[in-house]
Image 1 (cartoon, rainbow, N blue to C red):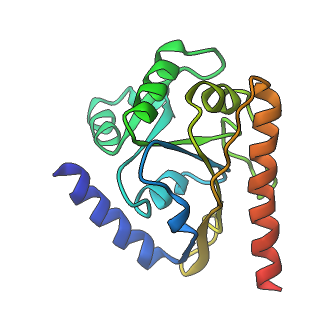
Image 2 (image 1 turned 180 degrees about the horizontal axis):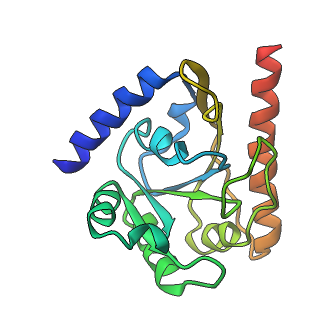
Length: 191
């Protein structure tokens, strides 16, 4: 109930705040999958979360869970804590269980927000999660959320990738390249 109410409010706020376009939502499969996303704004998880066909789950830095009320809200919305800068085995195990149960798991592959539209180097964690879960990966490009009121913003969900490799760094780079291709295609559409 809380999830639906907050999702409804956030959806309409973002719709008023930005001119949103969503492409490729049909690429999100029914079962467990991974949305691998770029990250430039605090709005990113909200925008993607209200436009997925079902509740998504996402790692969030543990610092966001210090305030009990805020922690309760973001937990209701599908967030769970991760210790950045280390191999947080508890969060990784939880992630794999979510995917195995058929949920949408979302991850910012850069590990932190980029200051501009340039993608940072992806973290190997995405490669580890893909390699262990064997789940389809949906490259997801988010754009425009740093603009002011009425700015054009959106999400492009790419076609699912099936990557079976224990080369976690190679998988991370392949996912990052797929997101870059979505970005390039979106820029070509504008011109």
